[in-house]
Image (cartoon, rainbow, N blue to C red; front, top):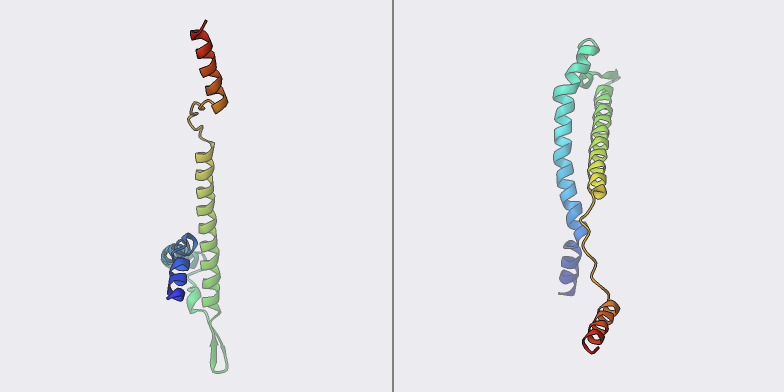
Length: 129
């Protein structure tokens, strides 16, 4: 029973749960970016390169086909994903910085224990004069 309890404690730590959420969101984000690359950007790149479909580019070497077009596509995917993550992190950091720079309402500080005692002594002295 100790092993199960220890595993539960480990699995419920904030970092593990945060990591799991990050992986799920990252997977969904990857699908979005892959669609952006494949369905939006690469057709424009194909037009610019004269209608070349990178994923179809191959080099036949004997009986094997080297799919260097798929490799080029993966590089383009990586660059776009890296750029999207870079921009997202910059925006998040800017929002955090703006939030930190906002002036927070200043709460009146509570008098220290010594100040309270001194006031009490002063008030007692004024009453006994």
